[in-house]
Length: 132
Image 1 (cartoon, rainbow, N blue to C red):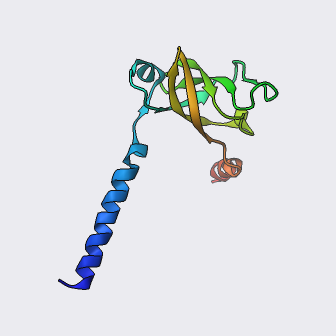
Image 2: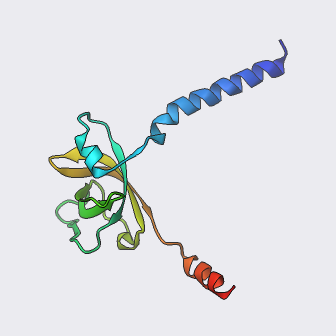
């Protein structure tokens, strides 16, 4: 067997192993209702939008790793969320949120959050499109 075949086989095996190890991160997104029905203790991901008309509570003097707000998922279901982290900068400007966590006592407790914020070039894109 040639050395090139051995190297190619090892690289392919490594790629398959890497895919299997990271496949848990490619999970599906849930709604609040689906996540609440899960009886196991696994974390799920929920996509939604910040409910800007509801209160946001962050008291770093009392607990710097607890931020409470309301989010509406893709189905329009609004729920209270507790983020176990500090309040992110420019949080109110976010367009979309992806939360990773689970339900506890009727509240979604998020351990991680990704924010999609508006691009600083978005206004320029709209301006260019309207000129053509």
